[in-house]
Image (cartoon, rainbow over all chains, first blue to last red; front, side, top):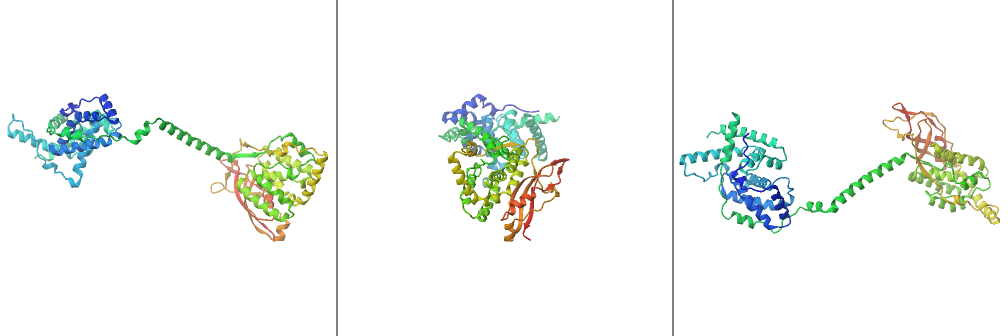
Length: 197
Length: 343
């Protein structure tokens, strides 16, 4: 099965379990420096995953990142340490994103989001446009997946979380997560086939 | 084939790049860090060592309460028995005709001290009818409150009344039967019922008793009569013994059929009731053993003029067909209304 264990965003997270424990206990003691350390280690992953979810809208991803950390500080007392801090943060970020797109007063036209402004000068303009269009379609297909499949796909491929970490926060087995990924691939293929444009 | 397509999709998903975080985002996030982080109260409480002890104590208290509740319910299967071998002093007194203690010297019951104390001045009053009525009310109340403990004991104590002196030998035998037969679960209840018919007589004898008491005082002063035995002054010792083999009686109702009466004895209407033309229904809660014998009666609804005692006396002689459940005769409790009164 095609499961990529690390991504660029995931590589930015070099936090081990012992680091998690140390940072968490320090934060609970009121150590502001530990909170800053957590932010420094994780904010790139949170922003990147939110930016992918938002279709490359950096401003919106920035706002949601701030909202994510505000919620994290409010609920860090309830964090029981069953999963990694980065996994827990991504769960908050994903929920924040869902709340944002599902709130009627803050409707975001996801389909009309501007494509990512990443144009490789080495390739031609046509290739860049084609790549951007493919990414837009793929992202739109991901956002049509059911919630559990959508969370699993985005957490694994866009936030760089491992299958084990996703299984821990979803309170299921790793096998169940792999099955979810397989189902998600099938659903994505179907969605892309229906929308060839 | 399918695997290849999935790998291609995975590659495309991973290839979607995200823009770099905008400048200043890290500073904003640092600035949003609060000075204090909320700590869940539940976590604080759980960290407190006393939390675990308190939780354990609460669980133990709940288990203890449940245990005592079950024990209390089981106590319904206990029968009251008086000691098989009464204290030596009491035994001598019972067998002697002349040294039966006066009513005032009778051992007060630990269960109904106020009742006994209230009876003493009442006996000095020469109004036996009124005293009888008041006593009857008290009997009813006591039965409702302490049944089946208090009422049989109070009636047993009345068998020591001075009225019983002329027939002390016979009565002491009956009393000894009631006491010695305590092993038999019928002992107390039947003995109490037998003595019930002497309640009126004992109360009617109050004037005579008041005359007898000075004589005994004079005799005591002359040294002819030994001092009241210490055992007599002490409360009658009672103890509870669990019926080890007899199953608990079940109440007749929907599932349990009401036992059929084999032998019925009609109650005798007392003279006072005839004069007053009293008439009504006495309701008893009757416990019937596996052989069909009445072993315990509890007055649920009574009538004045000694009608209750008559009905209890009669019903205690009734014989019922054994109630068989699953091929085994079991004791049952049944509520029996008895109509009684002057024609």
